[in-house]
Length: 106
Length: 120
Image (tube, rainbow over all chains, first blue to last red; front, side):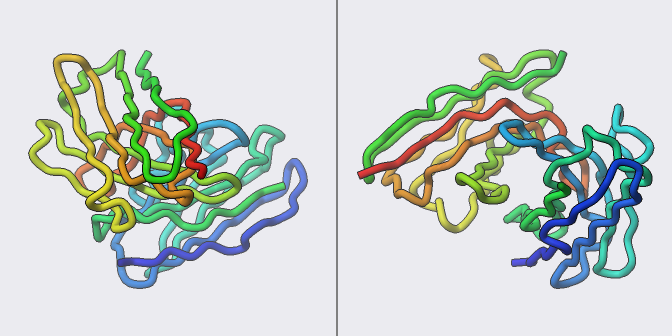
């Protein structure tokens, strides 16, 4: 199975900061990588699909990119509603659909 | 509005069974793969199972193979997860989700979740 790692596990940030979260796959997954945001007690929300495509309705301050097996989620200017946990998920080699361990932005 | 509503969670003894349901509305349920994802208390997300539009293909995470069965009833816009031989480690919030994409397979619509607690 493909393993996904995320870094950092948590990060402290302030409103207005540029935030970058990295997800690394254990092998090549092309662009089969999605990003989700989850707030406490709520279901996850799809932010980015296919590594860099913005899901409809998601603010443009969110963006995704890929470099080899490394994927990056960037929040250009952190807003109060962006404090949450972020998960990456691969779908290149399935089953299983594998999630990363998450990054908590606090 | 596209919506998924889960039900059926609860407290069950180790070794017991439970059936989760998920009712879809606001979209053509029969046109989509559907997925179950779970989240243990304080832990990350774990994909559990998914099922093709007509139900002909079903896939499971290794830890539930032989114990869980995913199914669907398209005329009723409903997705199910039959869980048996439950273990403490199956305790989690279970989410149903709509799966989209041709190669990136993302979950774009989620239910609110239903909580399963397995206890001896």
